[in-house]
View (spheres, one colour):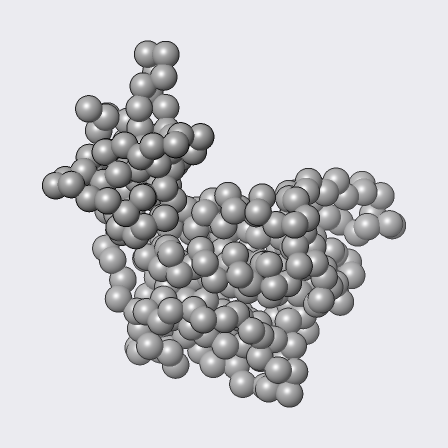
Length: 272
């Protein structure tokens, strides 16, 4: 969806109208936080995944974005994933970006020109390139696995969008057809249950065979976070983790397994 052509409608979608009593307020302010996927052209294979966690929220982050200015017909919003807190928004962005290396076309760092006559006023940021279906498959897998990090998935079409709450499993991220014009509000969809966020407490890990997790261990007298996968075995309070580069899985106490690297590094004191 062309952001500039539909700016007023997108603003109404992403900024809470305090007069609507049916919708739950985001914490602290009226701006929804979360992640977004945008591109310069509607059918481009080069995308930018970003996160909006500041006071301005998603709408103001998109409004001030400099990927393409002054060429308004090159700025398209593909997906927005609404989160309840800035911590969850940051964690979701890290989860998705950590998987972009699986694309056929590797993640790239695109250096845009400084000459405004050539490229407009654009910032130098990391972007990744991927086929549309590869992108959909990655997003679907990550969002289903980490449904506790987001509240709504919004899929944009040419003239409309559709909203899927985190309470429903994502089966596809197919955009609405161009003939559709409906623009539902977040108040029109089912309200997912929101877990209370406690600062300093890591996102709980849900047991699932093959799930990517992080553990903490010593390396040369220093604590370090290690990436692995749950192999499906449980013995008492221990879950078996197969670390990257290892052939055998090892038992790790459940309270020493983390959903993200950031959680593991932030909780080094839990190491035993």
